[in-house]
Image 1 (cartoon, one colour):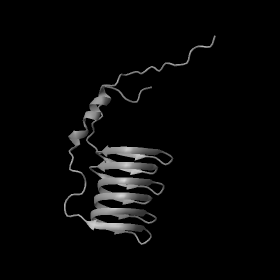
Image 2: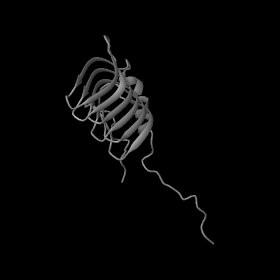
Image 3: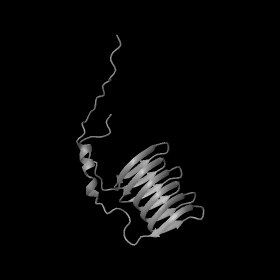
Image 4: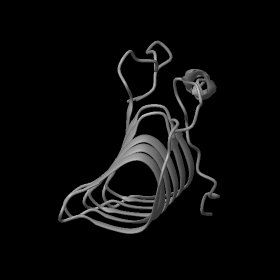
Length: 153
């Protein structure tokens, strides 16, 4: 059974959603065109043209740039966004550069916040990411894995 087919377009009229589920851990640098929700652990840099939400079990550390951020879990590092909202139980330990910041009475913020007058999220067009879509379309329909072990004599 294949998940990717050449005949199915990976482009959509709807915003894409990237999810890092609870129990998963990723590290590195991510450039996201659509929305992102993190319930697992992410260490590194995230650049998003859209919204990022960190769930109650989510833990993010690094440099995060997005249009809008909602934190219910833990966020550590540097944040650059238009709006940051810390929900009930959310904890942010970061240097924040944002136009708007709101904190629920049961949320926690430790760090420094500076106001940003211009758009905070990266000024990158979605077209810059479309080369990855071409790479998916060029994948073969079927992949056969072969064992590297030598047969027993």
